[in-house]
Image: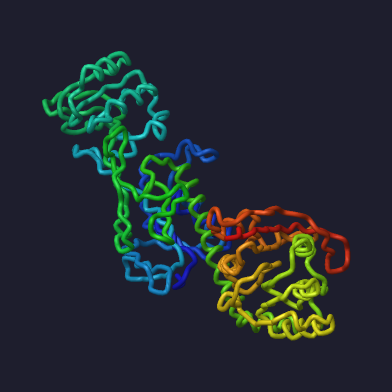
Length: 525
């Protein structure tokens, strides 16, 4: 074993191996720890498993192990005794032989333990001719003499169910509650005989079950015995993580325990998933395998999300501060933007009476210079000193330098003082971490009574960008509006919509892009 894995799978049955196979195909480094004692080992074959019908349980697992190994997975024979969380994240897994490994995520597929009725000889024949599930074993004992060992309130249901596979079914109440009138009528109607008395042992002839011996010495002949034990999740190793089991009820009666989880197998402990009988006690082999696949897919998606967060943080760190990033960006060329005002700003502001304006993310000054040229007194804020120097030079060339106050702000840290008749934030997007919603709420607070807030942003990637990053979300205008948290009755929504505009690709070929615009007015008074 190595010392560190993406995922450690604890338990190598159908759920665990299917999960490991899925993770291996997702190019994850995965280790399976398995004791090699599957619950269904005594059974002759696995059933209702499409494409694998009747295959020996051990042969199925051997094939599964080869498939896991074929995709780079590792398998070790052993037992996990404890698992605990590491201070820096992830988990430490301790094996019974003292070996330890670390993992970013855990998939627990340890199954359950059948707590069988205390009848001499019963445990030795479990899975052979002492059975529990008619869907797993019913066909193999069809039309044979089947006895049902009553152990609880659901035993009558079990007897009626097994009647589907044979007309020769005998119900032995044993320790089950006394039958009521309706239950006796149901059994009689289905031709199920009832033989009272405690069961004292089994009769075996030539290596096969031949009958059930009652405490009074009488023997009820049968070729198969069906019963139900308590189904207890094997989850003690999770105690160190604070993960506890809960009772499983059927028809109002407790039949066992499980580790609770959501439909994808995620437990209440972040980073720990479960699949198979440890969480779904009635799961058959094919269902356990499917649950392993679902959990593995969820684990991989969770790892991808975490890796993406780390990559974004690393990218932000490589950029340095927002000031450093944008200064470097503007220093790459003598002009980044066209110098023209944003089309939506021109459309939405042209009919407003000039007053005071705040231009957030002013860049090279196209919007601020246009506003100043129309008579507005403008405060223009940007994080880049390079951009502000360039914008100030353009303003002098345009003859409006005296109407613009250029201010350097990292808007997530500081914000221009004052209130304004117009606050505009056009395309306030950034590759560097930008608390956009907080900035826009500050922008709304800076609008004077009767003033206007104009927010213009991208609604998607350009038409010519065929493989855009999948983890970038462009908010809708309604989402922008909701994020502002404007007090009801104090604002009027003038425009909240998407629109399309032309945007050529880097080689000058025609293209288009969808943007959105939000225009709101603070009511006077």
